[in-house]
Length: 169
Image (cartoon, rainbow, N blue to C red; front, top):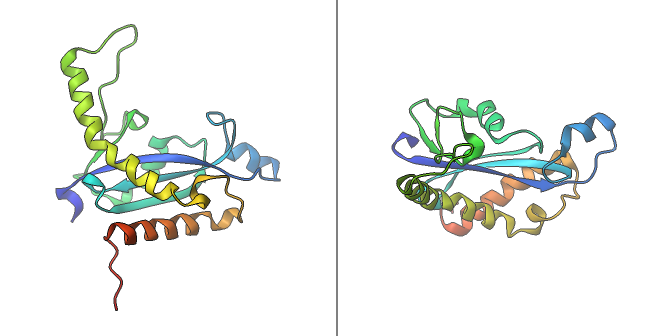
């Protein structure tokens, strides 16, 4: 059903409380953010019309492409998806043109990247609309086992707010 759309994917990290267990600390420590984090991946329809899929509660150091590969069984191989350079190398995902080492992009390549990012921008807006809620923006202080349920509830509220979630009366 979704193969007629070109979906957009992106992920973000959220700071969490430091785990007490040493193995869990190593598992959730993100060198990028220099703290312990959860990672959430969102897949949306074009123009940000609806949230299609949310994967939440994964360890922060897990790369974007690994997170997608673990959950790509939900989509057919014919599905077209746009992503940022964090998804470079995945055959299902279109990515922008990467600048070569010690080189520069041509003006046509730069223009193509600008057009690509203008279509992909809507996933950033959906992430922002989720992060309006403080529990999804600041340090997650609740029980870590509840993280996925909290994020999914917030995504449901966002869908209700943008008018895609229809509740039966």
